[in-house]
Image 1: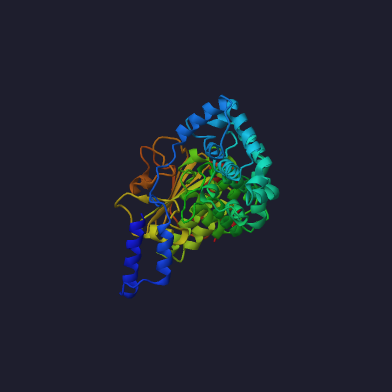
Image 2: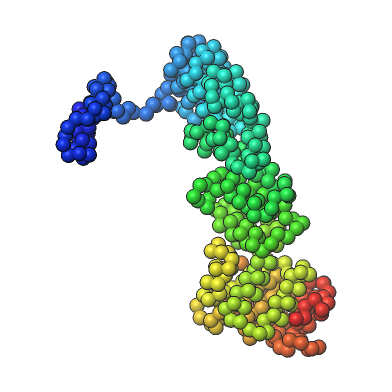
Amino acid sequence: MKTALKTALEDLRFQHDGSGRQSTLSSRVERAASKLPDDFGTLRPPKDYDAISARLASLLKSGGKLKPRQARDGAWCLWDTEQEIAGDPATLEPFLKQLRELKHRGASRALALSYLISYREDRPGLSAVASAMRDLAHVAGRPFEDLAARFRIFEVETGPKQVAEAAFQSRSSPRNVLENHGLQMELVLSGGFVEPCTRHVLELVAEDHRFPPMDRLNFVELLSLRPDSRSLAYPNHKDLVANALLLPFENSEPDDFFRDKTLNLLTSLDGIGDPRTHGGNWVNMPRARDVAISWLTEQALRQFLDVVEEVNPNENWHYRRRFWEAMHDNNAIEAAWVVLDGEGTREARRRFGKDASFAGFQSGGVQVGHAVLLLRIGNGVCAEWSFSGRCRFWTDYNRDGAPQLYQPRYDAEFLRSGRKYPPALEITHMPHTGPNAWQHKAARQIAKMTGLRFSAKEYLG
């Protein structure tokens, strides 16, 4: 190694001034290098902690005494090794007893790091290790001593909650809280202790209704997503993420911008997705699912009304908008799903984001810019076509041949005629005003399907 270092220094001299003359600095470096052992810089094989754990377990069970190096190595053999020292009281109790007696700084710091990295509430012996670290925090020194005093990190239940409370109050992540108090090791900052801290913060966010909507979204993203990624740092937090974003709005309506951003985030995340097409992912968060479905239904209505109006403007389109918004406001629409062609798809992605959900047409059979709004109404289903297309009602959604929502692609002819089950009613969108207006016919049909009653003043343009 010393010869290689000397050669490298000579190369550097030529690269910098081309003279090969020895500088005072390089001379000092060479003198220092000459004092290094011959094997300095040689990569050593990693320690075999499975083998170490077996040796230490045997030593501890036989009543042997640990040397400081063995105590330090033993801290990394508590869990996830062939012989888990923490998994057997016959090894854990004498191990922790000897660490208390040794009061060795390196071994105590190794124990603290092992606890924080491997932390999981169901770990065998975790409480005993935490108790030992409370006794040894002053031996381990900073930052562990300070963190123990400030956040009680070596109390299994209290520690994560204390860090979570500090993160919540400062609107930062538990990782940042620990970093700001001197804990810099990446294995710790992405380790087991940070997971319950994050979990508790998300619970606090879900319970607090005072957050401005976009502050809530930004904070949940900070807490939940991997850096420079759109994936969950902790996949088991998916229910907490959805609850934190949606439950505060069970009885209130945030603006469209926040709802669209929130839906885009949730539907794009593995393990969550769109509750209409990935319902199984939402089984354990039914209240959040109800909020999401409500928002997605309203969004689907906007997708149809806004996209069609943009792609193919029509002076009479406001009559359609007024009618279907009135039906939505009167809770006549249980669910909605939009079918768009290529032009509509591009506009929908621009308006609602790349992760917005909707269907497409199978090739052929529709005009450019055509769209269909599929609606669950009572026990039936409605297919509302854009342009000069008709509004069609099927009274039994579950009957074979009725259009089904949430399919990825649709045959245009099927949405016009049904399959083995023709629509019960077809309405042409003319005239728009007067006693024979199409809106009256549609409202009567929807009233028959839902039992609701509507005022013409609400739905006429």
